[in-house]
Length: 512
Image (cartoon, rainbow, N blue to C red; front, side, top):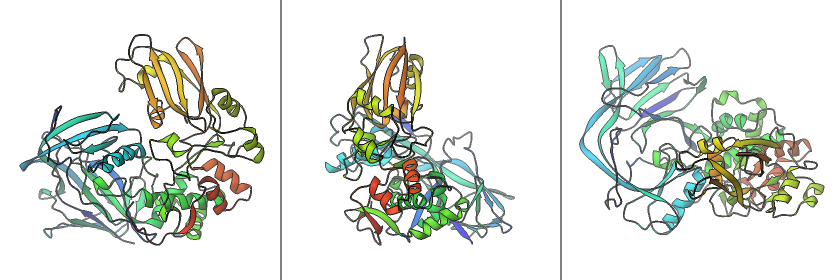
């Protein structure tokens, strides 16, 4: 089966932008390089544009090139490159390097920047608030999640903003190596891969595209049918050995999530990434017979609410209690992501929501009998944090923090998860308060935010917790447990996303 790789355009935002920190920017300047958005996927028959490798060419300067892009045929037939000028290159291996060139006319950019945020969900919430005021705010991911808005517009109350201006005088151009010398590529450039493309130990069928992003670098994108995309996702999310009902539930969620989140990287001209910022996607050939059966048996089916695909978030283990979406991220509450005990009747009757008191949370964490998914290795866990570890973890957000002396839970959500965590030092600096997904973003050794804190020594704290992940939506460990108990796919999905509709969604009325 053959694929085609297309290289579009020439980068107009280079790596030599002169950054200027300014209290007030210039009104009317663009915030970023404009990149054509990908087509909106409207059904299970759609193509998803998935980034296999972002930020290519980043770091190229006048004296050195960023690492090259090496494209290899997966079989005996060579790759065939043809650019817009009609030049043809046929080879089993094609190497693309990068060159910095001067722009004929420098590009001026200016923006307000909010962030960084721990997740797309939190960034999107801020962007949505700005859009409600008529501001053309966009979510960007130059390295972490940020929100960009034009200079001169109304700032958001309570949101820290920094002002950025840059003059871009160079661009990164892709270059192909020939026997006769280097030659710059002019888009669009197509590369046919009759036997597929060998990439990171796998084989991808494509078609592919190499395209500019909003930051002046390039992205290798695969245009992959949605159902084939699932073959590369499901095995890496719940495990190919899961019971069939759990595999099918995971498949429905992966399909739903992809459609609902296809705007995630619109700024850069593609739909989704292939790492943990999206759903992990790799070689579709790794899909087992059971995974393929799950995809076929649920073909075209999603979970929807108000005739739109839901935000089908999921995680490894919830520790026996589901989180509301607003406990995980700064987002509007939705009825299908709500706090709910996850276990037998006896487990549900043992505790009463909301679990906002430490003693009640500790009681839940000291128990497991009757909870679904308790076989997960991080269903219960303990971690020890020292003052030095906290200082190092917070050095970027709180460089003036000396030696932490107190670690205090300020607020819990209805599922008992920590919504805000305060760190105070030995001096008179204002305390550091981490909220929602920023807690695990900075304290990466914590499997979840469902925990209690106990000081066990001077500058030493023990955190006892439960679950692995944000806790909202489906617990993969719980779904496996329920499937082994005889629950159907539809029952599992209804349990974790109450009030949603399971079935086909032939056409999305609005872009997500």
